[in-house]
Length: 379
Image: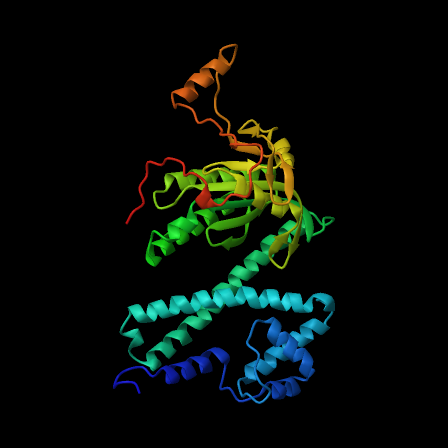
């Protein structure tokens, strides 16, 4: 039993459910299907695909809003706008993306409540907070959704003859070096700060250079870009920003260009796999690109592309990557090579390291020697 003045978890849960679900739970799954006019098996498939837990037929867990939602979803599926063969895949994608968004929003709300004793003093206060915040969150979400619709529609209409699902793009992975080791050395608060900082920098850089984030995978960002130059600039800028930021470890990157399959917000295909393999092979602070992208970038004077020796990674026996960096002014004439060699010996130039052997297995961040760094991590 809660102490006097203490919030009752059951009362709070019931209040929040009424606010968020649009009313009390009063129907079973079979009753919802009947009232919505949707076949029972179809309603079951839609519910599962959305990512919700399976419920028994006699459990009273649904509201009037659930009836309207199932009816609307069924009408959308029957309208012909969505091919029946992909309706469950569409539903799964919707459920997965919104589930992650909801988890973050609840975490944000709970942090606000626990850090503000006045708000968290009673379930009525918390209920009022949610009632105020919910419409505002819905407005923001709708705005962001519409802006993304407009942006993607603009790209699609600009090239009406191109297949929207299978198109030529630059795919890139950028990940933090030594992340696994880092998780054992810092506490949760500092790790959260590092991840937030990396996501913030990645979001800024990718947006600035006209790319699109496909997803953040912990210590790694997967992005796509329409042009070779944009893809290269994203990887180079992210590497530079990480070097300049004392809060972030070094990063490494792998880029590849070619046809990819875009499906429900994710990307697939051999080009994606190749970019991932290049990233696993890259040394800290370096960017590796595939042969096709290297050929494209060699035409632009602002980049320097150097062919590396063939390497062997999972799925590719003789992968021949190239290293990418910004072009630098170099001495010309007969003494150019000797001057460069002298500069490298004196530590005034940054030579591009070659792999230790012709065969390099998939590397992990923890197995790669870290690059010397002058910055210290804050504690």
